[in-house]
Image 1 (cartoon, rainbow, N blue to C red):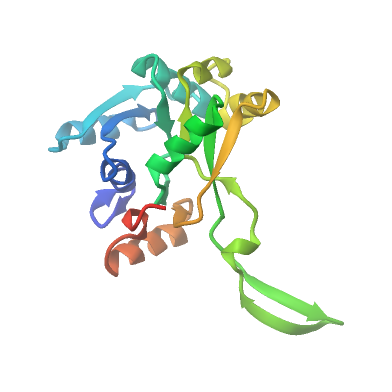
Image 2: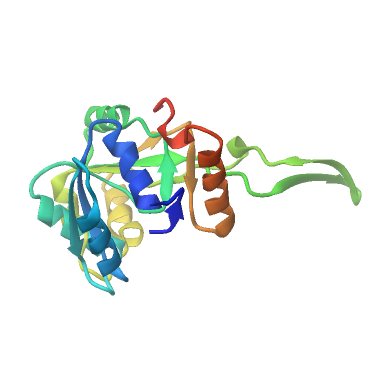
Length: 211
């Protein structure tokens, strides 16, 4: 619920989906969940939003499982609440269907955070900004999950990353959709300021030309 341009980041995240024709949302709440429930009730929007209390101690796996049980026997897209990207959701879903596996995760390049030093015999020979493409691929969220993926989550105390995902990998049931466009988390104050700066200088990149 951290604000970006007077709207919480979750609103910006939901806008990524709604601008591509997906506007039926289920939000898993826990800590300070009432704040989210009150915000949902205050919205005047055509979006269909259900906020469900998934418990204070529930981990990401349990939250996803509970949301999928609420939705029923349908394929879903699941994501975290702190990362924005211009993910082409149609391409993501088409890739998932073509792969024919139980789940797909969007792989992204992490934002470059540190300058690069090249040295020789103690002398700095080059200093420059780290290139985003120098980094490896990481889990950027934006999962496509078949309904039976909820069965890969054993209990509420299990993270999705530490439980279901390794099991899916072991059974060759997890695909990776490589996203080459904009993606940025909001884990730090600096990242929040970067996202706010994008908003201050025109159209936000997470809504630009979904790729």
